[in-house]
Image (tube, rainbow, N blue to C red):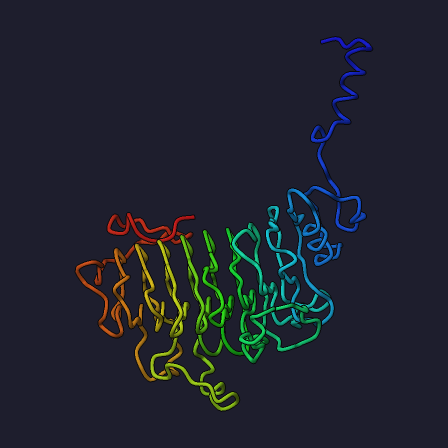
Length: 381
């Protein structure tokens, strides 16, 4: 094909028109110059500043993280604070993005209380997706705690012990219902509860935090909720997620001595803990090889088409046997498949609506079952 001068002039004009070339503006570009997104950020940039820039956009309020490891070299409350000013922003990682709670200069040292903090005033238009969060250790620090205006909720919301110490990977606080999609929560820990995620609505939020297509692997905490802790007056929805190798309960005696806190001292809590007056909706998830699967003392929770398999990874420090599910209000448990010697701690699950003594699911390396009995249940990548 041949181009004459008219063709070349037209091509030049088209390339200069909005939308006819890739926008590769980086974090740090003049905020006044940015009106539409996305904003791109690299591990060498200021992650929080990039999020603030994305929040100031008029259209396509999206922050895209380039591949690499994002972490802090100095102690602070969180690596990334998502508050009311960031409501509606989409935070998306390209392939190979890791957010870490470890020190950028010394991987043996933890620097943040939470890797991501989602504060009051964040709703389900706020989406965090396609990245890995690891190395959270729940260090208790109030350095650089975000300043938030709780408004009328200030009379109710209290930033106490759980605010600082729960949620190694993610802390959700107040009227906050963000969406997490395709997140890997791996190897996070706290010194109290919520090894990976702590949800603390304190009764002021009527929308759930949503987890969709996420993996929770090898997270730990000495007390409750090694993967997710749904504290009193909170709500969560968990869809097509995998829970494997999450360990709680190992420090309950020390927690009682130091903080005068005790919860289910005989059998311990689960990878997912749901406290009284809280609610969880858990759809087609797999719980395998955790120290207990689910303990739910909440109201009107639903567990549909889930797999519970060999959640007995305890260390013997709790006097009672392990279990797959410990649930008070079990009316919402339907279509679940259990493979275990101790499937139902309280005997509340309807055996006509669930399979209690299934054969081995025959998991593959990504925990997809190959036993046909599990065809309609459990997590799928």
